Length: 142
Image 1 (spheres, rainbow, N blue to C red):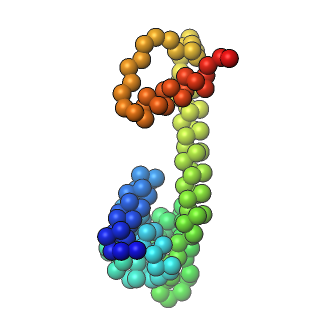
Image 2: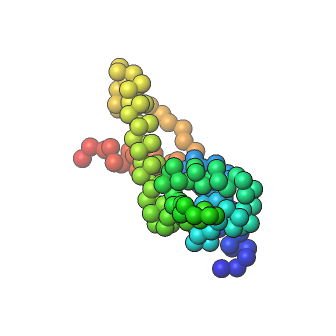
Image 3: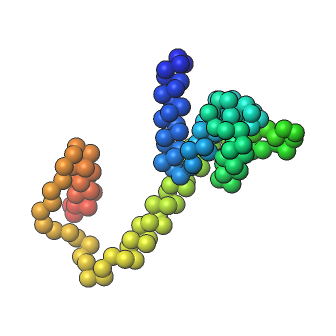
C-alpha cells in the first residue's frame, strides 16, 4: 500500500473509531497497534503520534472495551484483537445501542399516535427518498 493510501486508510479508520465512541488517542492507538501487530507504549507513541504517557490511558480504554490485550511485562506490550473480531464487536455494540434507542423511543411515542402515518411528506436527497420508498413498499398491503 502506498504512503498516501496508507495515510488515508489510517485517517478513515481513526475517524470511524471516534464516531463509534473511542477517544482520539484510543482510536490512534488502536490503528497503530493494528499496523504494528504488537508493541510497547513507546512503539505505539512513535507510530500513532500519541504522547507515550497517554498511550497507557488509551490502552486502558481499549482494554476496557475488549479491543486490545496487554502482556504484563516490563515494559508492557500491547496488541490489537483481529480486525474481523473488532468489526463484529463494534457491530454488536451498535446493534445493541439501536435496539435500546428504539425501545426508549417506542416508550415515548404517543399512545394516540397511529402507527400508519398519512399525509404529504417532503423528502430530499437520493438516499432519503430511496429509504422512504423502500419503507412504503415494505409496509404495503398485498
